[in-house]
Amino acid sequence: MLHIIFIILIGFVVGLIARFVAPDPHIAGFWLTVLVGVVGSVLATYGGQALGLYRVGQPAGFIGSVLGAIVLLVLVRLFAH
Image (cartoon, rainbow, N blue to C red; front, side, top):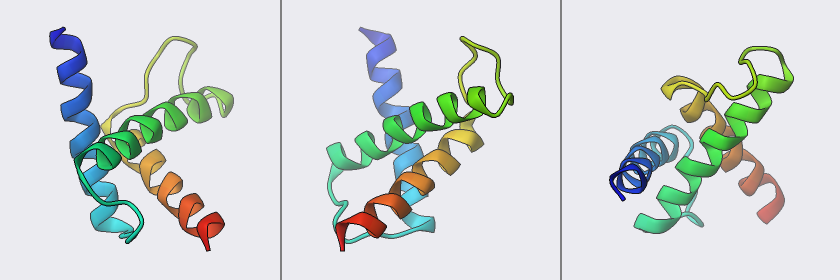
């Protein structure tokens, strides 16, 4: 249970930083910010593994997660309009 709370908190922080760097009016609220952070982290993990930056099973770091969340926000902005 504590692991899930930790994922939510880190996802929220990552999402907040990504929303600060690349603001998007469509992404608002606590849960959408958490979702952006967590999905951005997953995107960075698998993208980094595909590029050979991370080994299989190795998660992306904090900066990689923020970059993944920023890429996610840019993609949402690109395809939402």
